[in-house]
Length: 284
Length: 274
Ligand SMILES: [Zn+2]
Image 1 (cartoon, each protein chain N blue to C red):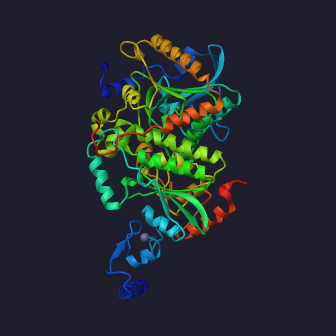
Image 2 (spheres, rainbow over the protein chains, first blue to last red; image 1 turned 90 degrees about the vertical axis):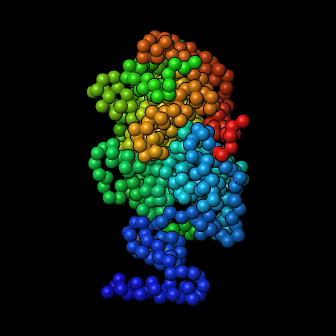
Image 3 (tube, rainbow over the protein chains, first blue to last red; image 1 turned 60 degrees about the horizontal axis):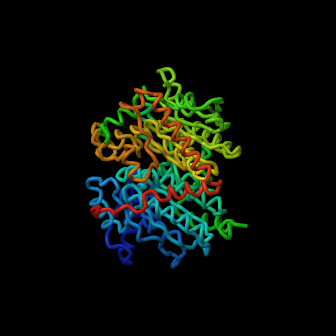
């Protein structure tokens, strides 16, 4: 009975939205977590959180920033940075141009200057549409420059991570970005800067094992997978199945690795509160 | 110049007959005092560390330990550290800085352990904190990759003022098996992966990732330990003397700038190298 009602409600909502010109189709989108379909309109109203189960679906970097920053405050930094191909890896340049076409991104990170409730900060956001948000030389360089810029301007640094780890196609040069970014945020923090690290689903490997785990404040969206090794690798290693909820944000919170879980529609409020508590970039 | 292919080098680098951290410590240092435990919850034997004298001078020495026989292999988890190991390393490095001792590390690991408890206790956080701490130390630091430098688990002990490699050691973003299974969904293409990954000491020297390659005896360090020890001893002596010219903050700056430059100035993707 309930289901019938909610389906009728969906159809009605879709119809109204189409009439108001908000959407042009009755497109429905299936949730990759619960498998249920919901109208795209409801997903949109919900900041791409599943209306049925609350799954926080991955979103693009620009979309995320547009939902967090004060209107008109977005100012992109280092948008000319582009990836390198140090191993001359077969097929990599073609893959990069194809992704640039489809996402509009040069690589998996966007950096920007912006405000939340008037509080100015430097933001960096990883985008999982671009090779799983993996960190190669361009991503490492962008994170590093964001930290250095925040240090120079005495502004807080907020980073949203979503990453499969080090980018294999750039080999050892990707690995070195772990050292480089960890050193950059460490230097920024020891200069008195506030660094807020925000995990989103999924963040693993070299990003978890570098800058993403070094925040003064550690936050995550609910249900995000956060780990060093991926669950499949662990299962193959220990030859047993991992328990439900293993390496999820709630699990990390229970084990002392996060300060708080933040719903997608709470980011503005939480960041605003934290930035206000650290006025002048965290300096007395 | 190199008699071995990258694939052969991976085999040599993993040869259990190569000298390991405990062998280098026994041969190159005197008065070794082992320090155990992370002071938080445990002791991880896969990282060996302590205080010793190098040519009379107190230093902190830390390295991966794979173990010499099956029993020790198991105890040391084949050189795959857990968070406790990295946190012990952090403790020893902080102490080295407090007492003004140089830090010398020996890198030889397949990677950090991908286990359930390791994740539960924050493997990622432990590695991240070690990288951050090591990057800012105000004492001279030298890392020597003696065998396998596998992934973040190796890097965590290698954010040093000088990173040196034995001639047939390898150092890579992931094992060739892991690399092949991620990129080609086929771990059996590991041999091919060795060829494209640029994981040999010579490739890494050319790429600016390591600052020196240490010659190995004829057929490799496993065939003549004494010769390998002499080479490493000479290199450490030379590099320490050079780093002694820098004051604390300058050491941290030199290290920062060196890692800062890695991956910069590479030709952009999609364009041929001139
Ligand atoms: Zn759902």
